[in-house]
Image 1: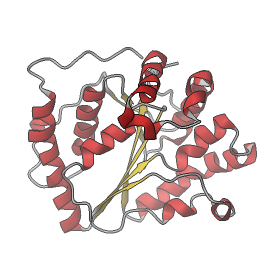
Image 2 (image 1 turned 30 degrees about the vertical axis):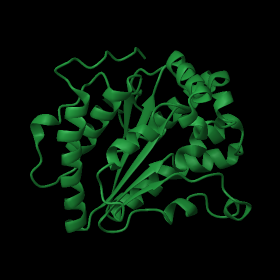
Image 3 (image 1 turned 45 degrees about the vertical axis):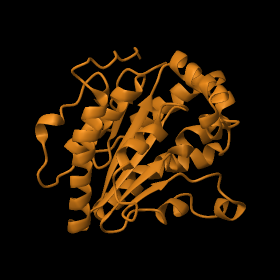
Length: 260
């Protein structure tokens, strides 16, 4: 995956984000609250791909009462004995809420698969049931939007290294980071299988070229807004760069060309 070009002077990041897109996000939230909608956004991707930064820009001016960010840690011994989806179900949005999963049940298709944290049987059970599970959620009235943020190996190495020297990023360092580069190819294979088998008609994947943080933020938000109905939408500012945001074909079709 090639590195995205920098924003031009005309394409000013702060103006677009603060003065345009975040205002549209507030409009969207107003619609969610007044109409009792339930919106679930799932953000997955490689380590250091920018999930935290993207979430920060999305929720910056939204109501904390109706906006929830879910980033579950390692399951407890009690939770390991539950149905795999059970602890996530408890965090799903209620009427009038927007919920963002910073990683999700797709941990099983990614880090758990690559790092050997689940058995082959558990992995196969997950892959065989996740589409049906998400279909039930959609049929119950939850709109699901799934984004996979991808970066190339060099960009990931630079971002992981910056975590070691930036005192404001120390909290992001984890033992898993050490394996992100060593197991790059294994993560690539797991990612491709996940996208190939779980991009369904009811809950398709969208892939984001996240090599440029600013272009990622702007285009991910544009895509999100363009796919949800709300009053007074300003369509003219929601044009998405196809080099940054790439729809993933449904079930069994080859996903977009990604970093390998």
